[in-house]
Length: 96
Image 1 (tube, rainbow, N blue to C red):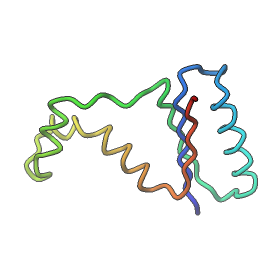
Image 2 (spheres, one colour; image 1 turned 45 degrees about the vertical axis):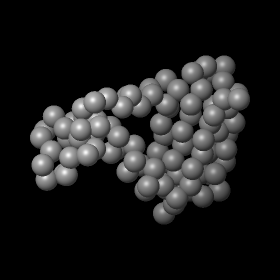
Image 3 (cartoon, rainbow, N blue to C red; image 1 turned 180 degrees about the vertical axis):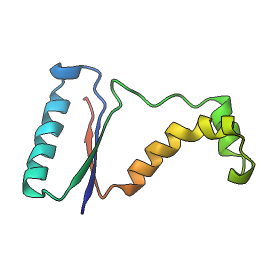
């Protein structure tokens, strides 16, 4: 089964042309390849949190030495990286 990661970056919502284009592409892809698993991220409306000092400390601390607070500082970042690495196909909706 193919895994498709669909990212939309436009903050314009329904007025966004890039969102419309990626939505149509993904819909047609899935029609043609129904076994595809789709993960969707709207980074235009829900951006990744900024890198903080806690994130930097956690990133440079060996995993076996991380406290629960340091693990939490990396949680979203780890989730996003895992999604990216797990995907076979990428669809990026980026405003121009």
